[in-house]
Length: 263
Image (cartoon, rainbow, N blue to C red; front, side, top):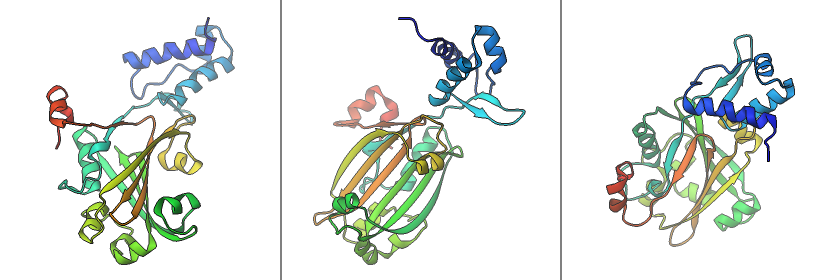
């Protein structure tokens, strides 16, 4: 079955981007130029470029010097099996930063803290009463100055009152996982969930997502021997991240994939 014309145009332009004929920062031909070249209407051209925008390959820039520009595509690999391991020497923040730097990028973060009433879903995850107060620690993570992921971690208020550092809006040097372990709240089990969905308006704004871009959501509930102590929502921009998890003998895998060797 023959594809619609706008998809054919998008496919040809996509091929030029993938092959390197159109490079980062290059402008696509103008709408009139594309109309003339392909013999199509303005709406067909707009549908074609809109598809490339949705795929994260290009972005529309306003103004006289703007147009449709080829984006730089940075894909960060998040190693889920390395995240927040209390036995590791580095804090969660340092582990993430090290991973970004190892992949050749620059890492920066912004922290904030609020006190919120838990929704019924969150209260159930933390085994507390609905509308109970909780500490929300938010971290927005940037790769080369571009927002890449967002982490929201919820802690029951009674736990935060026992471990007062959780009430600081700044980065915790040793990381919250290690801090809790030091204070007698070692997390010995995790329940992980992975979801792909469209972003909320807030996520779209915080991560600077193009229209149509999905997010990868990693939800982790951490348990001590006595109770669940936190729920973390890791929101990854779907066009800038991939998640890798290694199971079994990591040394064996590293023989064939040296990049997966433990730090």
